[in-house]
Image (cartoon, rainbow, N blue to C red; front, top):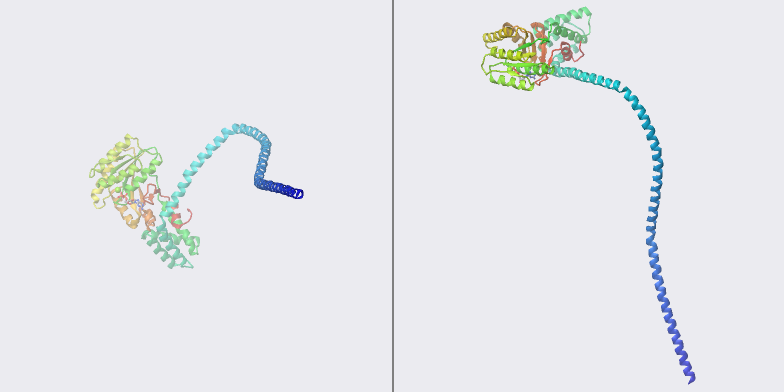
Length: 433
Ligand SMILES: Nc1nc2c(ncn2[C@@H]2O[C@H](COP(=O)(O)OP(=O)(O)O)[C@@H](O)[C@H]2O)c(=O)[nH]1
Ligand SMILES: [Mg+2]
């Protein structure tokens, strides 16, 4: 029995030990598991913290760099300050010199400015005038020069046949028969005298002859400085009298002249209204009466206004009704008398306006007007719209009245003093001769 007791006791002890061991093992397992999870957590933490560390490191690096750079900047700015000081010093020295030089520099600048202004005023004006003339004469040039070139190209030597064809080309370009014959005579004489043999050389010679004809007429200025001036503008209806008066008023105003306009074309109300528009455009006072009133009375009032304003120029528009020559003559005579009587101190100028598109017809108009009035000068309008610009040469040659202005368009500055050399050059597409 004692054996069994011992046996069972032992068995119980073993069991207990076993139980205890198992518990211990379990506890150990538990703690192991715990440790594993802690380890895993830590591992996780480590994995997570790596980028953070990198980030932190990067930030630290950046801070370092910033600091470093600041240091560099500080060093640099110190250098820079030195440089600034040095430059400032130099500048100060220079500015002293500049101050000394200032008056001279200013004077030079003013001179240069004035010169530049003068050049700017003169140069484009000259250039503008010629280019306007050149383009205004396009149709005439194409017609005339084209024909002359064709003739000259067709011949190897200068002979009678060439002269005949050239003569035809000039007549077709509205030079007029008399003027053409005269020109051909001069051409033959020059060819002989200069022993010219090449047909192509005739072009130069023709230009010379035309320039010569255009400059032969003595051309006096339209107005006289230091005197009051009266300009009576005559010509048939539609040639461009009113337009020309507007353009002239504008030009005189640009030359600081005191201008007055008189609407002595009282035949139609529209004529007075049209002049009013031009007067407004050029900011010029206009003296006008009612439609149908006496033109001489308008001229009379125009003179009164011009005297009161101490005007430099009085420009009178007129109605040019050629249909009634006796009436026209009476009207013009009366206006002339009023001017002589009321304004004897004034320089008087009668300008006839001719429409270039009428070509040779313009010539006969001047002849009629010359019968009723003394004509001092010609304004040839609408050269821009015609191939008959050659008529100028005929007009200058046969009428013995100088062409004073030419119209090359409808705008306010499309009127230019007639420059014979420039006209011939534009006609031949060359330089002035
Ligand atoms: N293309 C061109 N047209 C012009 C020129 N001068 C005048 N005219 C036009 O000719 C027309 C008649 O002009 P206007 O002054 O009324 O002629 P008036 O009856 O003689 O007074 C108008 O349409 C003008 O614009 C010019 O030089 N060139
Ligand atoms: Mg008119």
